[in-house]
Length: 254
Image 1 (cartoon, helix red, strand yellow):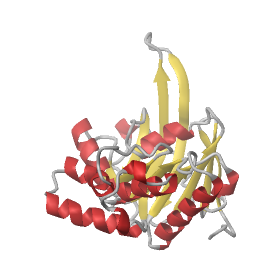
Image 2 (tube, rainbow, N blue to C red):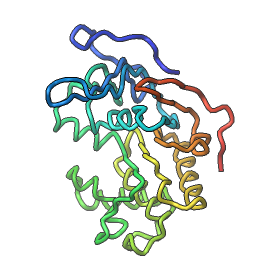
Image 3 (cartoon, rainbow, N blue to C red):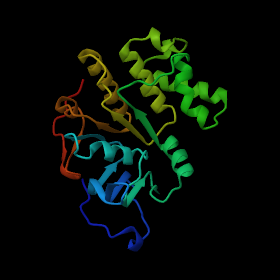
Image 4 (cartoon, rainbow, N blue to C red):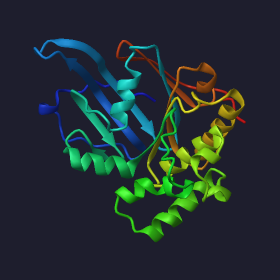
């Protein structure tokens, strides 16, 4: 499932195109960090070739320093590659300016992190509306979309609550609803159960299972092999390269 064809330098490459069933496609992607004097500090990614199809449920794994966090940041359009091609939802994001990239990221990707990052003064419903507020969506449409997203994660009865009135698992569900409210092409989760107890973490993974069954594309960064077993595909990095890309034959499900 991983594309291994090498790609020439961007200056000589043909116009980027994406396969119709892929939501993300990386070709010979590299990320190098430089020191102030221009010398190389670290080659975080040294030529990643990866195709992610719509509806996949993928775990990205790797030891500290393997490049997985850098890869996640580039996949999420939070950072830019030094070289290579990145097609996201049929668009070449490498050539976008900062404003265009920010708008496209907000519409295309939903983020979920260890820290819930909820605004304590706002209700659950208002917290979920925040991404739509920044997109200029009118209040009535924001409210409708928020209620729908909260319904997807089983929190329709908590719209008026504040984050402090919820359990950790419920707060993470609010964070998932906030990520879903823009109806993104990809849901990205970075250690989403890291701040939760084991039982609550299992329940949150069950929510991801439900979303995957509904067709959502999910990319999860995790260091936990037990969580990776719940996914359908595992991509493991080492020294800035993909060292393993395999399907999970019998994924654990709830």
